[in-house]
Image 1 (spheres, rainbow, N blue to C red):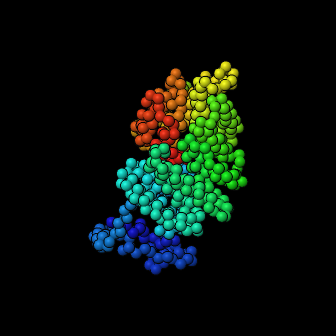
Image 2: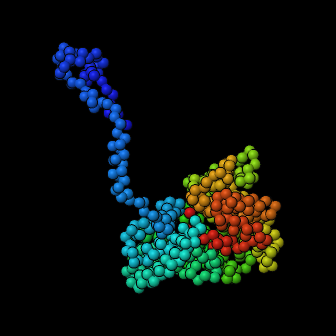
Image 3: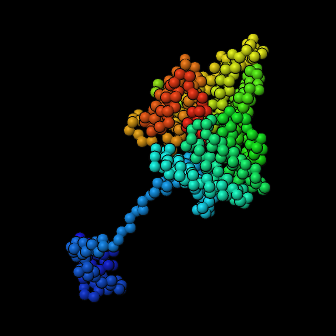
Length: 480
């Protein structure tokens, strides 16, 4: 039914002024007396309510005969690429925020396109447990290798930002798909190759933002790889960090923290080579731990956090205390500092039992085994306090809640520090049992599959080397 307006016999002027219209032919008396031109009267034929059902039906049938375009089906490659760019370029971590312009201007036969396809599908397979994506990602990876080799034969393309990005992404692919750094040669091959490409450049790499960001990514990835493999930092990385420093804020907590991690990597490398006595190991570990403590005490205001104490016990808050951080990036930075301190103090208490500790045998060491254990327990509690903000401990009905991808990724960055805390804390603290409970919650309620893997490893007697677990979790592939 179509309604064309409210019928009225009065002229327009009388209706507006709410006057009684005498309805004289051609012009009403009200308009004549006011010397106005009368607007006339509505055509009552146009004001009738008519049944236009049949006419509307005919219009609908005529439209239905026209082809309606279907919504294009989204391929798994498109979905994987969107997920990858959201996580690594514009969303959660932004570790490859310079990738988009390089990708858009890269020809389809360049290694960067194939590398993005491979790592996108690998990430999608991890995130959504998609076997099809895993199979295709391996094919894309194998297709990227000859394209990369071809690019490396040209000095111009070998030193381009596009090629360097492709190598870094293939390294990321290895970290996502391979979890045994000590048996797979490709674990370090791509990151070492990226370092070689940087050394080939005749012009400074850091003259623009893209070069600066790629260099910073390479520096971080190579440093973490060295730590994971108990290898000292190569001179080329020291030089790269020196070249980067003028372009960075030297007071940036993340940069200062990475400098201390370099010292830790070199200490672990020296211990691995057996070139230090226990006396020297304890002295150097104690001194480095003091530097980490100093960094924490003089942290930038943007890295400060607030502590809350609950009045009642909560199963997802250890000892009724939790900390709230500005964001997951700051949380992860603090936990890196804490993991380093736990590992350093574990070195100290481990080497106390050695017969060659020299003067430390008489108990004169400022950091004996009991003190180191006390520090570890306190630091482990600090790590526990970072979990409740991401597991949303205040939710009364967690089983009815749906967690977003971002929420799960934030919790995923907690898995490694929680494992280190549970592995090294004293059994009397109940920290290990609480952490296993949280890991099972993340697995069962939040859908984080590797949380159950870490819980199972942590529950075993003796535990597993932290860096082996770190590799199982994907190394720096899922870090913020």
